[in-house]
Length: 308
Image (cartoon, rainbow, N blue to C red; front, side, top):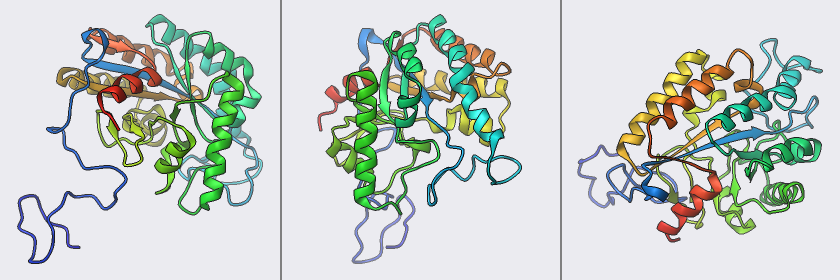
């Protein structure tokens, strides 16, 4: 079907329809749909997701790691530089970030990879005692879901991820944050089938919405992620703090939005960057009328206002 500009009259025999080429969720614009009413009359829901996963030294043949996240020296074995940078987050960075979140009264949401859940129970406990919620996050940082993955393999990965979080935390996760935001065309249906209620993988809106599977989409704001901005786009830390705080101010003025800031402890938790996380959070919560919450709680409130 030809692509038509807004307002154009389609050729005879062709149906005019919104500009999407999939049926995973309906099309919606900023002018359409509800602004979510958050508790206490808050204008904005603010969540912070800590990404806690394990980077393998030697991934299995065929594993799909994000090709953008490689050593400047190229791909080789053993890549101790890349591996040790990632491990820094579990050894050091996460504690700096948790201290900052404590200071601003933000309870973390944790995207917990299955291997990280197995290897670092003390980090799970550290987050749990703060009241964190935990999301499924695949198995390893080096193994993404892709369309090339057979359906039964993807279904098994999702099930094992959910079971690993439940074993580590005592409760099955309601939310899913995919490795590097990656999904196949089947993922939203498989997540709903597995018992998940929402996902934070999609960054096509500032408000929650429903997928055709019934799954809730909680905005991911990948553009604000420390990994996307500071690591891949080389945004300077102060400029990243400005990006986050100024973007938040716009959404806060519009009202009824959900903001999810994704942080990787090996990156935002570095000594050279941690002050800029504090700067960004100070400017966001300083707006007033901000509901500081978890992704579980935000999805629950939004979901009750958006029946499947």
